[in-house]
Amino acid sequence: MDKLNGASFLEMLDSGCNNLNNRQQEINALNVFPVPDGDTGTNMSLTFTNGMSEAVKSGSKSLPVIAKIFSRGLLMGARGNSGVILSQIFRGFSQSVQGKDELSAADLSEAMLNGQKMAYKAVMRPVEGTILTVVRESTDEAQKYLEEHEGISIEEYVDVLCEAAKVSLAHTPELLPVLKEARVVDSGGSGLLAVFEGLRAYLQGTPVRPLSEQEKKDQAQPLRNSGYCVEFILQLSEKGMQRYDDDKVRNTLDKLGSEVTLIQDGSTVKVRIMTNLPGDVLNQGQRYGEFRNIQIDNVALGVRPSILDAKEEASAEEKEFGIITVAAGDGLKELFKEYRADIVVSGGQTMNPSTEDFVSAIQKVNARHIFILPNNSNIIMAARQAAEVSEGRDVIVLETKSIPQGLSACIAFNPDADAEKNTEAMTEAVSAVKTGQVTYAIKDTVVDGREIHEGDFMGLVEKDIVLTDQDMVTAACRLLDEIIDEDTEIITLIQGEDASDEQTAQIEAYIEEHFEVDIDAKKGGQPVYSYIIGAE
Image 1 (tube, rainbow, N blue to C red):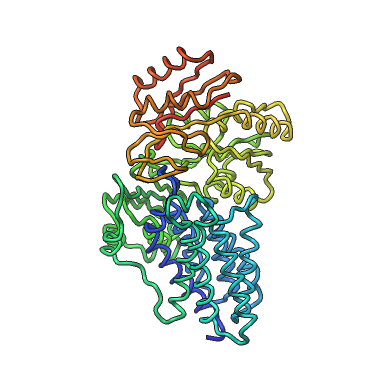
Image 2 (image 1 turned 180 degrees about the horizontal axis):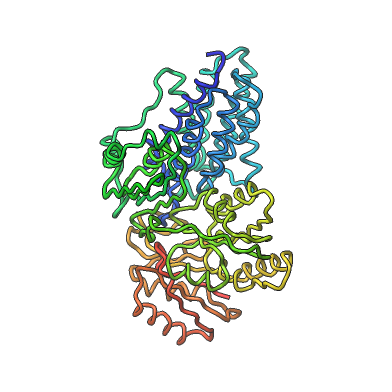
């Protein structure tokens, strides 16, 4: 193939999307740390699926239009750092192909190089040994080949791109010691390679198709009680109203999961389903209209209250400041609201909110200046991306990487100060917080020379695992020894959903006996982390 047109471009993307979706569990399994971390494969799959859904729904056959709509869909659906980077790659790609109805191998290479540059530009502190390395080395190598071999075909270019990405991915453990120690390659880079290999399969005449339901069940080897609880509220389009058939949709959903709730109320459809295939469920819904609300929860980590009975929030009179923050757990959500947060976006370590989740929250907060507190390092990029696309709004993203940092930022907020002074005060408050967390190990592994066994409780200081113990309370007390120093004045102890009041009382007694600090104990109800500890 010498030229790629709009129709073949869309079919090629579909093959890449299917390959990524089919391999998402394999990519999730590359998790380096034994801590639940956001599921890179699932994040990238949901990101790419959102882009494909928008492109298909447009009905366009124009390559520049498809690329632009696909890019926008990726951007709005981006979850986690790898999802955001993936969206930026195709954002750069889209910019490069505008005005071109067909692409040659040279055009394709130019677009991929622009995608590479856009991805690096989006990351404030690029880390090599990640998806960034894989996209850079593969696109550079493919461009070099193109320059040395005149008149190559589209197939030949993509084949070189895939092989270079495979070599780059295999080399990632040499660039990131943590990958080498865990004996895995980078998960984000693996996801990108899955996309590239799907593109190549289409060009070779064997496009990747979605796995059958049985194949997906056979492929999935879940830990604990796995899968996802997917809920959405769908506004049927005019065509969707004509095509929608309750029995047909219910039968389709029954094949994708279990415990299906399906309610149609006029032009609104509400769905709840337990599934291992969240992307496929959303694909089915998007065939009939526009999503008004989406919620996806990892079952192993607890399910949030249902959104099916949620009511639209009324727009308030414009005010000077608004605060959007991210948290999981009813107690934490209420705590943030007590500390002046207008909207608490559901999410955290295992279910990263999308760019669109933040954009929706920004639209609901009627304020001249809006602060976003992501409270997790894997959510910051999506928050920044939402701020960028929310034109006409002054959105300030503070790099809060933990719940205690977010709480401190809220406490430091002064409604009588201006935006600049609040930004300075809140940033200073964040820098003064040391965060400790107690969680469980989901697999046997070795991290920083420390042998960790599935089921162990681990103590983390910021993102570093500093201790393991078979007992939750002992792990928490040992962690306090690590984070409390002579300058510490206040300890905030936040109890998770799997910790008891009795265990919390034991930890409080330990603090009172060993340290001269004030204790502020809260019931957060958060999943994943038995205790979150803030030291100030």
